[in-house]
Amino acid sequence: MIMPRLRPKRLLFALLFLGLALFVALKTHPVQDWLLNRIMSRQFAQNQAALFDKSAMRVIFCGTAAPPPSPGKAKACTIVIAGGKFLVFDAGPKSAENIARWRLPMPKIDGLFLTHFHSDHIGDVGELAMLSWAQGKKEPLPLYGPDGVNKVAEGFNLAYAYDQEHRRTHHGAALAQGGGLVARPFGMADAESRKRHDASAVVYESDGVKVTAFQVMHEPVYPAVGYRVDYGGRSVVITGDTAWSDNLIKHANKADVLIAEAQAETFRRPMAKTSAEQGQQQIATLMRDIRSYHITPVQAAQIADRAGNPILAITHQGPAAPTNWFMRDIFMRGVKRKSGDVKLVDDGDMIILATGAKTISIDKI
Image (cartoon, rainbow, N blue to C red; front, top):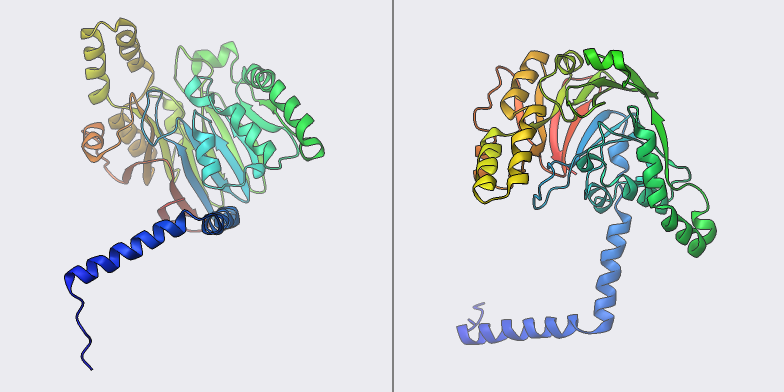
């Protein structure tokens, strides 16, 4: 049977008619409500239970930028999920929004660990505590960190005191429990260890998950630490902000993944020069000074080689995070590994380490 051919004009008319009919339908309240309910059902039905499968350790990057604005990137934040535990390391601005948008179960957060107290690492501490409480956490969020973390917790609790009071008054029993932060300081700020910068301690251990904090070199910021997380024969190390540090290399030894901050000189130098030429002397001074307490992407690769890390994940990309292939190429100029891979990570990237194996896979949340 030969089907009749539609003439081009008739086909165009039919498509325009269908488009107009669809537009009119989308403007009607019943259709809008039906679509909205479908969207809401899908969003609230998202189940991230698979991420808590104890057969793997998972690293999720919830913030990969340094302080300057970087479209699409939050500030410093890394999640480690292992042994059913939900651990967050640093909470820079916009990181809590990422975690909420990915529908991760905030009430399950077992601890927030701070590397140091710069604003781009703590800006969303209050929001993370508030959102985990609003979603159902029945106890204050534990805030781990070196000496000084008490003041950070007290400050955020004070800043959010009216917020908690108003929400409890409005919502009653639903928010009667939990809220705020409880500090879990672990020291590392005594005069003797400041001289050596070689202190370390196990600061969290539960259900086979062990977190070790160790000093790094971020002077004049003191104390500053990195973290190593071990579970099921797999391990990841988070540098925090640091210059070259022998203690970092020691604790990163044979870890499966080194998650390193890095500040590219290929970005810093022109930013310092341009700001000075344009009369922005304060920014120029900051751009000059920050060189002393960060490692470069090239140094991060050298540290990963010395420590024997199969994967180097570069995060906290500064002074500004690259957001396209051209800028990424400049940022990574000169980076080479003798053995192992390098990945310049983005918000939402996820590294999966199967327990009892050597496999490492990279995915998106």
